[in-house]
Image (tube, rainbow, N blue to C red):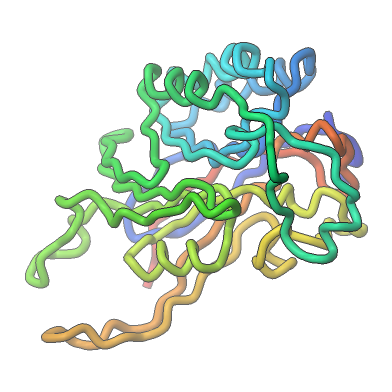
Length: 295
């Protein structure tokens, strides 16, 4: 049964076949939008550590109130003991303001002229102090469960903060090197804006994770999104889909064939405090179960 409320938390398990990383269990969390006093959300966030993931990927929008930083860090405390990476979302930087929900049918939301700043420096510093890697326009490489993973992240494309920086230098294989020995490449962004997705996919990402859409938040029966608050097609508002990379010629090398890059968009854990409702779109976290890709 599809949950109707903001506290109908669920954990989805999504198998994803990839070239490398088989056996990894990646916990994808996004869009917590924490407000002080949300005790049911607090307890559920703490319980996620019982899933014992190999890696946590946080795709932003942790906050929804100026006083939320301390409490959300406490709620995430058990997860901060696991390896992790993160990017920021607009509601990590700026407090939300009330907007007429009908505005979303006219296109993606925009920042107000004078938004209220949030204490993102404290939030991100605490994440980094725990060992999580900051991927806001950065790259990183991690050894997780005996496997090497290469990351490239961008800051929130929804508000124009994205600046793709490539991949860790040692992730680039020579043409003669066996690609099966390369680290698995994972791209991370908050908003699944097509330009950012195409950049990550076209540069060699083998899996991309994003959030931002809230899965549509208020959906038709069956979870069909009405809006995505970006240029992502509505059928891709949550769950596993893909980004298509066309074939291309590379000077001095054989033509690279077209390929499909898995994209996972989280429906998110919270809502803006100015619109605390979910309909046919329950709040969620996801365990991505990496499987061996068969050819």
